[in-house]
Length: 193
Image 1 (cartoon, rainbow, N blue to C red):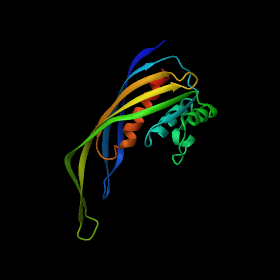
Image 2: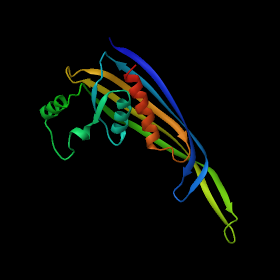
Image 3: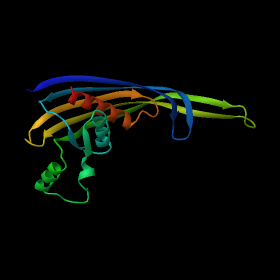
Image 4: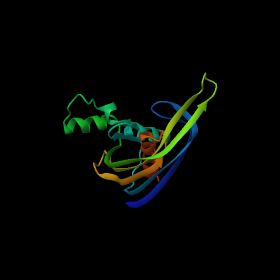
């Protein structure tokens, strides 16, 4: 039976120490990251998954899946990027690895903007003559879209198909990891629903 699901995950971040290119400052920084997901799935019991994605997203997905008892490896842990493989060799290695499913994640689009919010000045009267440190505050907004497909290794059929939209805004140190982790959490929860 195939089902359509829509899931929304919101993560709110509170960071007590922020960072800039030149110095550190102490202040509260909030960020809000939201992942919306529309998916279709068929019955499948996930035990061991191979994840193919660019960058660090594969390892974040595997971390989320492992926390929920699913064995997981990223594609580059199984296949060397320095070697060429035939379709048959790829299939043989996936089956030999005991994987029951393979996840492909495609980065569809990414858009980021920054907004200058002003600055904070800190006066240090303990130094001889005193000193003033000024830190510029910048807010960032961003949206990322991913396409996700999972195939059953035995049947070579799709068992999961999703499109995600992760968006949010925040100040310093709300980075790639935060957005990718939000998407990984949402996808994992949706797969296991």
